[in-house]
Image 1 (cartoon, rainbow, N blue to C red):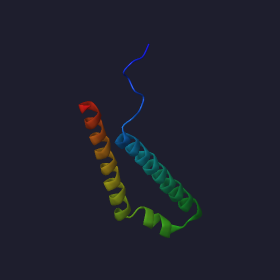
Image 2: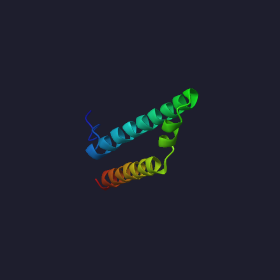
Image 3: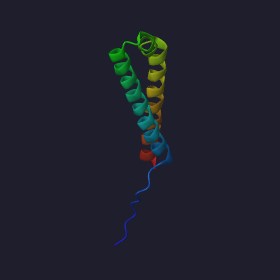
Image 4: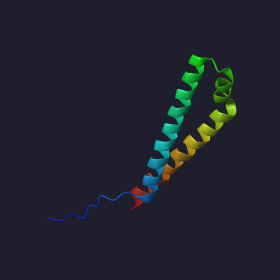
Length: 79
């Protein structure tokens, strides 16, 4: 019995999933760098990681990925 359901995802949704994956991996890398720099006493790296500019960019990227997910969901629901 054949059905009309396809298992293919939207290209935009796949792109958003990859973006979220790499964003979370980058965030995990920053956390690991922060913990290691705290353990070994590298204060310059800690100050760099806690600077407002870095967190502002992380927030911008997170909002962008959220917007891409929202667009993909609206597109899929309209199909």
